[in-house]
Length: 395
Ligand SMILES: Cc1ncc(COP(=O)(O)O)c(C=O)c1O
Image 1 (cartoon, rainbow, N blue to C red):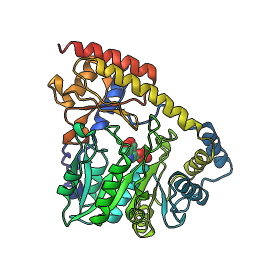
Image 2 (spheres, helix red, strand yellow):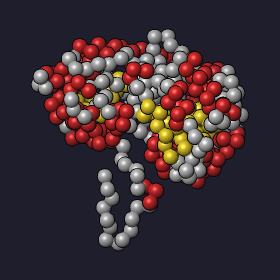
Image 3 (cartoon, helix red, strand yellow):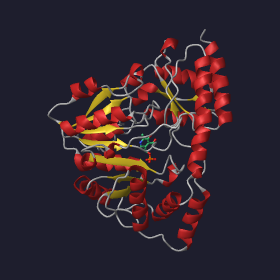
Image 4 (cartoon, rainbow, N blue to C red):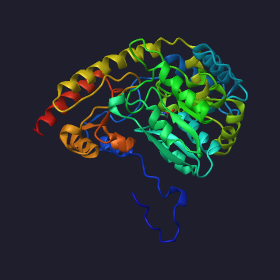
């Protein structure tokens, strides 16, 4: 999309020159225009946040906790978050200087880029990858270096590919497992190998772990910061959006060593000042309260995951692996001989089912579409029926 020339002669800032709107939004907007659309494009749970968290927010509002919060987050929430890092991963962080509460994981990534990347610095990230990373790197003046994620390697980075991209200018690597858009996860050995590369090459790692709790079949998520030499070079990004179905509350956080976190703190201070106070009390209650709401949600995602996996593989032309984490399936649609954009458009027009073309996540996403199974089981069944019927027309 180009920018319209204004009569005043004003132009958008040069730094926006190579930034395009996210390919997800276009399909999301289409969903609003079709009355009976089944929207499988959005990456958000269809659940409500836990009741006790909602109650806590209302209580906080009644108690007048509506003022500016401290820049790095309300103290009780920071305490609860450092406790979480210790309980979950045995990681100790100082609640004052090694943790920042942010406007979703989104802001954590943004401030990390602006706090750490110099013009010309190379930032390794994956292709396909979450739509935010590349533009954030570019806005900060950095150069994205894309690690291809291939289906034959179950969308996990190959050591050779990573090594071949590293130059003297490589400073940061962004990793995201469990992964959006592929649903892939990494084994202990794979995380250990990537960690070793980061240490040997003296790189900072931004580990986006917002799907840490949405995993299946008793598998284990390994936090990058727990590996030897990694605590001092890793920023762990996390969020309440997915785990507690709090996408609209816009609350996330980032842990890291003081030296790495201080620059993020500065950028955060001058962009958002602080995070919505009430949302922070809600997040606190979500963390302190019973966690069965999370396991219940994941059990339901698991049911949906199996439905999508089984139904798609039964439809001629689709090939999909069982996703290991998050709530996305990433089927191969190359046999339909359409680009992923054309195929997603075909599904909009013929099935009224909204997905996201794999190309929205990078050139290696071409030949795939992303299906979010965060919609209800019934809606997913309906979508699979419609896709099956529409695809038969291609014949
Ligand atoms: C991998 C990944 N990271 C970060 C985010 C940002 O989430 P939020 O800003 O809602 O915390 C998302 C949202 O879809 C995501 O998929």
